[in-house]
Image (cartoon, rainbow, N blue to C red; front, side):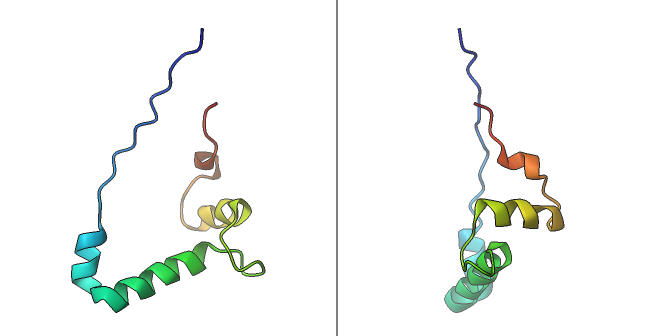
Length: 69
């Protein structure tokens, strides 16, 4: 018998406060900067490998990308 795993995540929507703070153009600029930070520069897209590599520099644990089966 398999044990159920609760993978509930609390989520707080920061979009409205960011929109108020930065305005529409500023928010889009910040989102693009975040995607550029995480992407693989050679491929021009975010890959699983680029997330693992860059997570260490951001203080995230690479093991957080491994989900229980």
